[in-house]
Image (cartoon, rainbow, N blue to C red; front, side, top):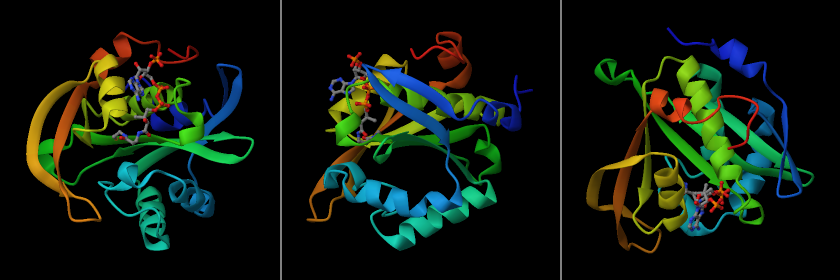
Length: 199
Ligand SMILES: CC(C)(COP(=O)(O)OP(=O)(O)OC[C@H]1O[C@@H](n2cnc3c(N)ncnc32)[C@H](O)[C@@H]1OP(=O)(O)O)[C@@H](O)C(=O)NCCC(=O)NCCS
């Protein structure tokens, strides 16, 4: 059984944090965040959004995200600074009965907020949510040239589990290898404080 229910985890928000003298607020995403997320996605480097599940630079992609959120298929935590959304992490549940203990995580931060520890913090929030949902294993997908993401996940205890050759095509038609990394939820949270501490 999960240690805390999802309702109990959500009581921790909004969470005010200071990272390298910059103030951020973390909170669960709601349907009304659609326009702010569209603006956030529009500023991301194209390579960072190339292999997303949906194109969140388009209204249709944001609408699908909101529908998935409302159906409980995904759970997203947003980070904001004084100018708007600067990052998110998302836990995607899957429909496969034989794989219900596995969820996919996505985490993305804005250029202006990178290198401050926000990606690490958003990942921890995603794991707290995963734990409350009974998820045992979290996977993340990225192209092999996403060096920042690989370094972050490796530092957090993720292991490489699969490499799919030429699996992603970018908007110019070039192919990229896709790396699947994975981490057990319990081992992640046992090496990190679940609440109250940034690291
Ligand atoms: C991956 C990503 C979320 C990291 O966000 P971030 O806010 O810059 O990450 P953090 O500041 O929390 O970094 C934590 C640690 O990860 C490692 N790291 C992060 N970015 C790195 C980079 N570009 N190069 C090397 N190490 C990096 C470092 O160990 C860092 O710790 P340190 O700064 O104390 O040395 C961000 O680069 C991003 O949005 N990338 C595009 C989307 C993506 O690929 N997402 C992953 C797939 S789901």
